[in-house]
Length: 199
Image 1: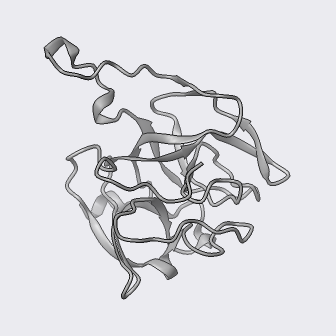
Image 2 (image 1 turned 60 degrees about the horizontal axis):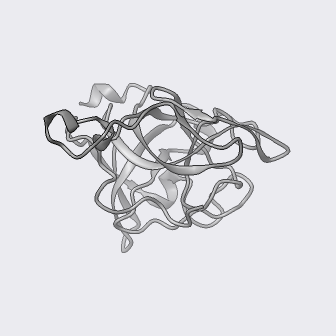
Image 3 (image 1 turned 120 degrees about the vertical axis):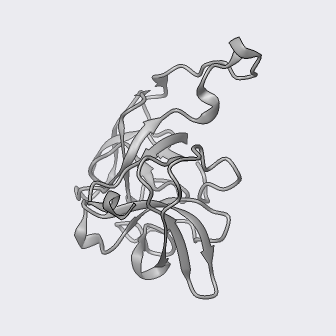
């Protein structure tokens, strides 16, 4: 279980498309992050430069049609976050394998995480502080979660051993326990709200 958002240099897994960065007031426009940001009042990790969570944009009342994007940088002095909204960007993030909730806790689980399966921004309290993505289309309060994207290959998931590379193929689907598992996957980000017209 992670207590902070994904960080480091491997968060960006595709060089294309070109970044489509926009500035947002982190406290007013982005969720879930910070104190009381989860649906039941729980806390997510606090944004800081060098952390790269996938977050939803705009009021929660818009759900599930909120834009989603990955935070590329954050400036605490003015609480300003740069968020990449580029379609088909592949990023590495924590994803929970929960599929459904019952009585505010995870109830069913994806035990076979496969390429192309949808991933959602999920503000349920039962997810760890650093986890904003799950396989569940509904949060623990039965509210629809915004679509973030789809499970996808990371750069080093491809087999290049035949051309003297060091990477053996990582087979999908990946088998995980029939319980809450939060681990890193790559996600191809999407926005189904017309944002593609901005590029």
